[in-house]
Image 1: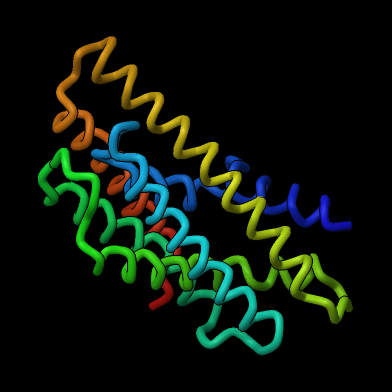
Image 2: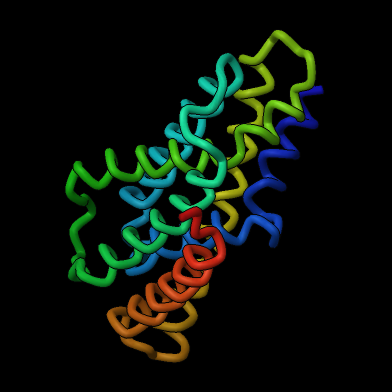
Length: 191
């Protein structure tokens, strides 16, 4: 049974229908390379922890915000992250500002809220939420690592083989994330 939750977690992130999560990871990963993987992995984990926390809350209570508001806030998180990455200088430092981990965690709360209804349906009438939740979120983390690995590989190919400057590549990725976020913001506008 836990394998089902693990598989669903991976599918949740890697399914093309979940391109909002992929766009968030695109924005989050822009400007990072394999040389700076540790702070990036910590950011991805902070996002997963926020996602997990929201799913725990939703499994025991009703969502705090209406789903239409959450669906609108998800592309806003993509936009904010992309704009931050666009403004952030590329550095060889292996660490980043600690506040970014908190913001990424908070954005994980929003993205987790967007998936909470599906997770509730997936659990059915089960009262044991701990094991399914851990398996599902392990799957989410694995799925995110797959996407991040692909994005880092594309960055490597673009900067090492094609010889695009990392700053230019970062701009391309963030503009793509911004375009997706604007499209999703218009599509989900709740007001």
